[in-house]
Image 1 (cartoon, rainbow, N blue to C red):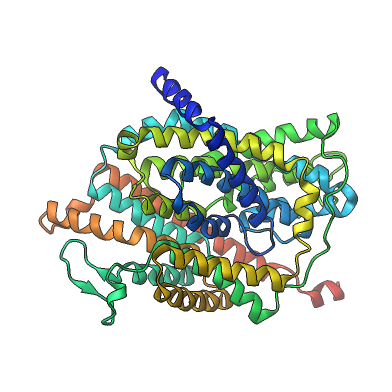
Image 2: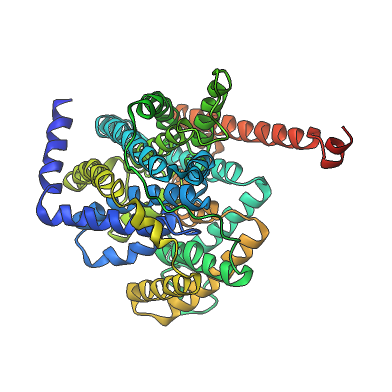
Length: 510
């Protein structure tokens, strides 16, 4: 405990230098600005801004990413509250009651509730990460190839099963990602694979290129093809950016309950914060139905407080899972893993031994980033609302240029830009057919890891299947079965509710 506290204080000493504080502020501003725009979101904010950090040293880059990481999350809920177009699916639950508050003239209070909830959930989760990560890292250091293979397979199957209504579509997306991951030179044998004779593909397809193409360019193509979705009513965000005593009293228990939902889901690979945010929202709604004067449906402050705290609590512990296990449990965490890999760093237990200064500075900067976001977002809510008025043609043209310049800057290669456009077209088809993007990204990033650990396990066990089943890996596979079973049961219950729900004609005759 004392050693952890000492390391954390050392991280604060580095993160609180004037230059590093500047990078946190810049990251928070950029992350919020991109995340607040409809159709973009936090994962795209991280993907778009990733190329900008390559001129910085690793410590400064990840300090900036701490701001981008949480800034994008707050931007997701801001766009949902003001326009009912949440940047990520994890902000949908917040937008339900938040937008009703905004249309009722309480947009500022809704934004304040979301900001404080995000701050509270994030601080609790980051505290858990700071004092629990060393223990997790020590535990993970005992993992062998079989255990890491089990973790990768769990991420593959769980995310493919959970993030899509159709397991087949999730599996198709994962297969596409794994196919991209196999392009290039085999690390263990030196053989070339799936390059079609193009020497530019010997090093494979870059993870940054894939994430920018999928999340940014695919969205641009989709908007160009469909003309964008019909705009919702836009609230101004004006008013008092503070909560009354009565509002605060209502919000505090919801923040606590939401944080409790979010903490464990940052470690469980279920695709991100969607599950805990809806669980938190559902609990608040059930509690509200038992009250003498129900508020849900008219703009309930508890309906904003709980899911927002759950979302940021999940995001915080997801960073712990990424740092200690190298396991990304959401699309945003997957892009963060790509950032580590671009600097030649591999998250996992050895990261705490090889780069302790970087790790503890990053954890400290997560605390600082949350404070900066609270200070920035409470008074600047009307400013973020004005960003929503940018004409879409200018907005998406700028995103296209930004994406192309960022990818070109990585290797000064027009070939990479052409590949980005090709993958962007694939992303367009995926959006049009309802195929989720997260399994694709997870497949690209974890595919090489899974392949390497698979071959190591087979080598150690001399080709025996029993080598895959150690006590720890068997437990991980057990968790995987529970997650998949839960997803199947949830899908069956949803389908049953839909089939048993009365149709419009039935209600009319009734």
